[in-house]
Length: 418
Ligand code: UD1
Image (cartoon, rainbow, N blue to C red):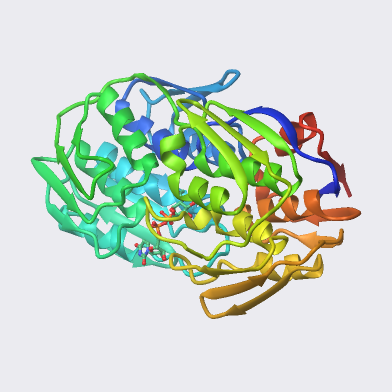
């Protein structure tokens, strides 16, 4: 078991090149099996979830090769249409394989997915949509057994703009018979990235990034090369770190347009920010203001994934901030850990009231999920004294070499084996 040890009180100052987005690369890797040929995915972050996705791809019959920053997927020999329950439980995004496998095999057998423990994460929207596309689905002993022959295009209205369900339907639809129209589709930039990748493989996906996506089914896809979009949540995590520690940071390889909600909150909280093209710069003014209210919403609203990192920032702001978590019902597990470090936070249902304190103090804390774990690193960087963070396997799911990036910018952080 590894831990991260942080000695707080040093400004995060320097330059970081932001990794490729976890939430974009995972569905892209799942989609690559539909090429029937080889794909090269550039800007692929090396993460625990990417490693697990690689294992799923190999079990399905793909050949994988990893270069520096890229991954090669040869999908010319897919010979299995099943993902076992243990692998599916490792991460939530494994459910995206369902649409891809159905498209390749006309049937699929997959365990029900797992992921970070942030509340119930049902797949009813995915299944309802796939049934509309002609898939017969039986749920038995933790497995979904699905049969469809060739998928059929359909008009699909999502009751909620779920990221995962939108992606699953897109994958199922690209080689389906006829046209699929998704209304109330998720508009996250990762959806647009997936659509670009699919189109590079020969698909006909239009409207991604808006709430109506139209997919004209094609007979065949082909291999391609693609470079994954930058990770907007990782970028915001580092920017918050600079603000919390009184530092100054230049981020390379970002997409500012994807981060408007977060950048506006950072500005309100006292960050001096410049963003142009693929660079973002933040400098602390030495003062952190509270934020009036942060409500998580589907994109372009404030991302649920940035809620906990911003809460760490609000914990040392001047004044009171209110957070409302609208996407997941159990996404405040970092609160007790921040309180151990001296934060003053009260949770009531889906809301948290954060009264800024002058100082946080180092403590032994535990990460219970990916972004909550990142919030603890941020708090530790700004705290007095030494913090030991356990549960860092959650952080490794989504942050590539976080201790390397931070320590190059002056932060005293190291990984220890215990
Ligand atoms: C994706 C991201 C995750 C991010 C989340 C919100 C990936 C791998 N994961 O998760 O990191 O935190 O978007 O931006 O990209 N819901 C249902 N039924 C369903 C599907 C979803 O009720 O069939 C509900 C969920 O319980 C949740 C909400 O819809 O309350 C949002 O879920 P969704 O957008 O699907 O998030 P994920 O795709 O799981």
